[in-house]
Length: 342
Image (tube, rainbow, N blue to C red; front, side, top):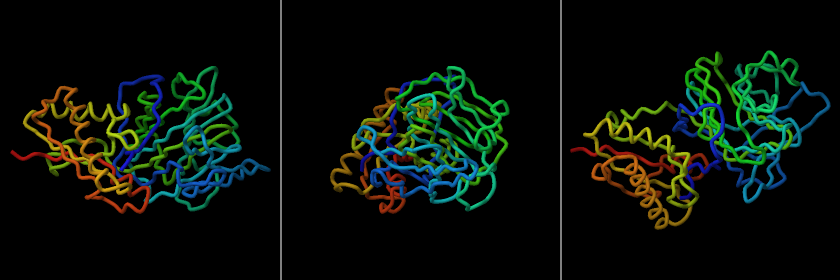
C-alpha cells in the first residue's frame, strides 16, 4: 500500500517556472534507505574510488535525520546506484536533498563511456549545485577532481536557496535535451547536452544529505496513448504515506491531464487505483478506492465534468511486477486511466 514515491516538498525557488517536470514511468531504481542499518554503507549502492584525490578515503553511510534515514558522507564521495536496467535515451532522476552550509554540494555524475570499473576518472559529465558569489547555481561540464579551472565550466542562472531545508531535485534527460528542477521550478534547460550517458553516480560533499532516490526510464507524456492503447498508466501522482492525500508535486501532471481531457470532450475515463502488497488486502483495497476518488476530485476542481469520470480501487490484486523488491512495489503503486467506450 503506502506511498507512491514519497518525496519531501519545499517551497518553490529559482530562476523560472515555465515548464513542467514529469517523471518517467519505468522505475529502474528506488531507495529510501529504510532497509539499511544506521552507520553502515547503503546496500543498494557502490562507492566509487577516487584516485584523483590522493590520501583520502571517504565513505557514504546511512544515518538518521529527523524521522528519516538519509545518505550522508564524511567528505567528497561518489556513490553508484545498482540499477535494475541500463539508462535509456529518455530518463529522469529524482531525490530529496539538504545542504547545511556553503561547503556542501550535491551533484549527478554521468559516465560517458561503457565501463564497469568503480573508479572516478575524467570521463564524466557532471551537474552540481555550487555556491558562487552569494548564490547557488547549477554548474555542469566535464570536470576533473580536484577542481582546477572553474572558468571552463558552464553555469546556470542564480538559484534562491536556503540551508537546512529539504528540496526536491528533478533531473530529466530526453534525447540530449536536459532540464533540471528544484521543487517545481526550472533552474536549468539545455536543448542539447551533447553527451550520451552510460551510467550514473551521485556526489555528496561535506554535510550534504539526500533521500528518496528514484531513477526511471520511459517516454515523455503522450496522452494519446489513452486512445491508442485504451489506458494510460502513471506513477506521477504522488500520495502521502498510507493516505489518499495527493502531494503538491503531482499538480503539474494533473493539470496537463485535465487540459488534454478538456480539449477532447468526447472522452470519458475510469480512474483505477493500485497499491503494492504491503499490509492487509482489505486496507489496500480501501486505500486504492480512496486514492482513485481523490484523483477524480482533483480533476473536477480543474474544470472536468464529474460525469466524465468514474473510479475503481483494485488494491494489490493486479501487480505489474513482483512485490518482493522495492522497485517492484514502487512500480505496482500506480494510477491507471481506462478509456470508457461509448
